[in-house]
Length: 282
Image (tube, rainbow, N blue to C red):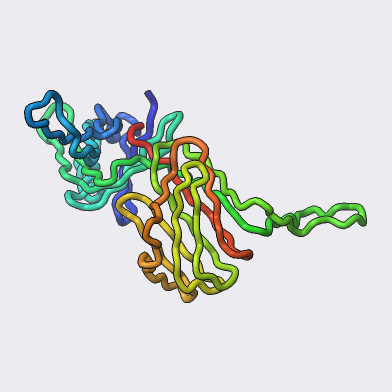
């Protein structure tokens, strides 16, 4: 199978593992499949079977086995050490005919065997985040007024619209990956105390309550391990307003397939949902 594999550290330098015979040639990649799950159970006293305590997915471990051939092996080995540094951040890009994804983690080991017929090595990367992410985002917009101004101008003298009024407050977005959280960005058009986002398909809702002023930008992220609510009131500064999260609300998620969300806010508010397809295995 043809594929591309690139490692990039936090400073920007990269190393590719799908070049020619005089480059870093991959022999095997582990960690592309879904990580293993951990299941904890307890037995019943004097009864058959057991009951579930909890179940969760372990961290991802990517292991890359490779060879180096041709000339300048020592030079390439030293460059590899500069890019793939133990305990440091690393981003992994993986691309095939059907997927173009990335994940990130931290280098556990980077070992090269120098005294073999063919110089070989192995890189181990620990990824606390279990997902592979698409390199492209999907965005759904909502606003009462949608722009209709365009070029070229109509040739007739008949009136033409500069904008259209949106009577629906439903945002529809497609999730082609696994179930995961997302980011919603709400721009205030007037004063308000409460804004609510509903998942039309599940009847769950996420509500915030506070002193919302015109032109405020509220960013809500619902991804597990990174649940945040921040407020930008101009000047480029963001304030943590997670205390505006109303008790009883749900941290909404993006289910597989088509999702429908509804914004309940005063006229003049606009919103956009930013979603990246995520996969347990590629």
